[in-house]
Length: 212
Image (cartoon, one colour):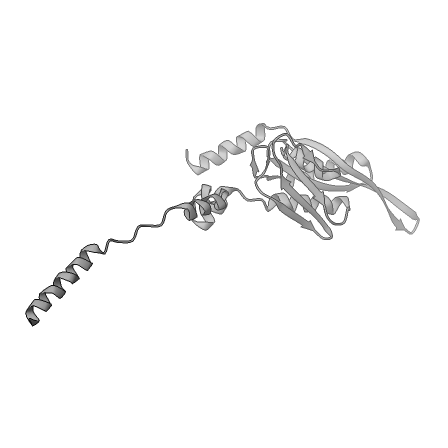
């Protein structure tokens, strides 16, 4: 199967998956105009297929349903695929967005999603089942979700790293094990010098006889 056929098949699989949405926050904002204050609503929404795709969107409108609809449309434009290893992520990563920072760590199977607020929504809709997450900066919900998305976008697969370094996948996954095996390997035995020494002794004896 060629790369184009694989991409077509992948797109068909994506289209067949149902996207689920989750509203993280709805906020009422006011704009001061000449006649008084004009109120509107903002919505922060996460959508995903609970397999490996997720997106975050932000919408603003005079009514809540319209704001959510705008946020969903924005999230569909920002869908991306999350690299995973089983039920967790491939490696540890620190996502940043302005003053917000989110630390994401892989976890063993059965750990669950140890995260709170909007971070949990993003990870669950991305299909991650076991992970440790910790907010290290500003708790602003918008920046928190942006930091989580930036962290997930920066994840790389072992195959990509191995191709960039020109190594095999197992060398990238287990570098310490390979180093220990190299150190434990026995050193090559030194070449035998006995024949050369015997030849030198014979030459010395011939020279002694000649002198005599």
